[in-house]
Length: 313
Length: 270
Image 1 (tube, chains in turn yellow, cyan):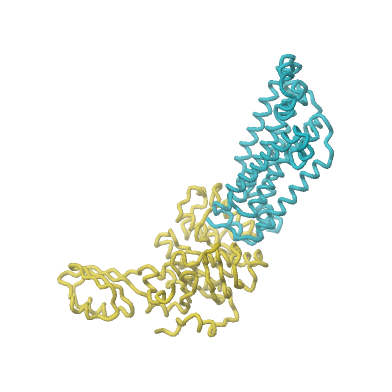
Image 2: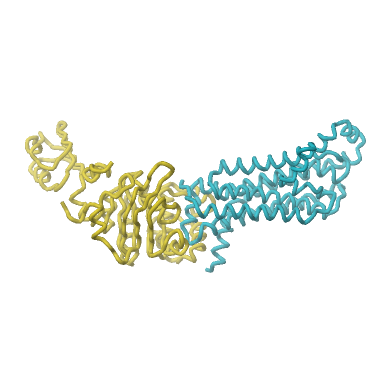
């Protein structure tokens, strides 16, 4: 087991960061009788890309809306860029940009008019940068807002976020509804932001997306942190679903003897399994036999982190 | 870019968003006023009508403001300013306020603005100014169409009486808009905002119309803002300044409730 992923109890003692962009301690948020966030402690360092992973309903959006001061925590303390969101909300939001998970834009006007309007509220945008981002994200500035598809609305929100000259980007499931090409462009923009020293807080329910962008990752489940560590530490830990089609009879005995495979299924020439741990032994077996097709994919987050989740309710 | 631009944008955005509603209301007011005043020449000094009305119970005539339907002030009161126009102002105020606040929040569209470097109070204040601005525009349209129709159809009444009456109706609309803002600040649910605002407007009308018919209840008619606005017969008598003050002060107080409550609660998500 990699030591970078410690239990949360140990983590608190070891990661006291002086320069925190976000510091959350003991955050609890109840909606009536439902506890959406059940005591989160977290520090995001300045200048890092921090992945905030969790399945839908884990409490990611609730945590983020508390950061923005859209929600008021039931208990706990939050500090963003050294400021209290409740007391210094406007000053704090001047230094960050936010892409909401559930994005609604005004019904009237064009993309360009919306950007101009937000620009006036934010104290002005760089037109050259606006045009550059519009080209990279393939946003038509003249389009009417109500005609935008959900993917295009997301691109507009990303454009607005990356257009603002800020110290912190808070992105809630930013690639939902984006095609792969745009996801690639998004990751490039995140890397550029990081290179400029911007801190990026990136929530997602897809591990691979976070793996490609983040330095560190926190995994949330049912309102609690179940893991936190460097992104590399998660790589060996995550399960992968492998599906292989053999040209001839599959080597059943060899596949059976492989360690670290779960949910093995042999169905005619098709073999599938969940790989937990190193994938090398399986690849060696596959390499010795004629394989027609091979698919390696990420299962959903619950399956990916089955062992992390096993101990939590 | 300055703080002034920022504040202006928080007003201009929601103001622009409501122009269709404002146009609709303006047309409704113009049609209502012109349509009513156009029949004045037919009712002026009508003996038949006067006799007909004379046979109706006095209390009923009073409740519907029809005591004196053949004089200019009585005709305008009975036809427009006892029920229809103040009710339209109240409905317009509630609807403008609801859609600019709770309606936008419920649709998840407020979040975009609340994530900017402005306080919640500033966002809501901008919307309040936009709502009051549109009410003012509708009031101006109402005033002008009333004055023009009066002249066109020979309805003789002092301009000052019309200005005061339209002004009082506008303040009444502003007050119910403020009720809507207060509820929106507390809960942010458009259904509740609309039903509370419109419901209270209706209750206010009923209290002002029916309480005076009962000896026991008559003194209590003054709990209704309708009584503050129109209880002084503004079409025939000069209006006491206290009526304007009462309407404006309660509007300001309700708006303050909305702004303070909104700054303290969770913002609903889409």
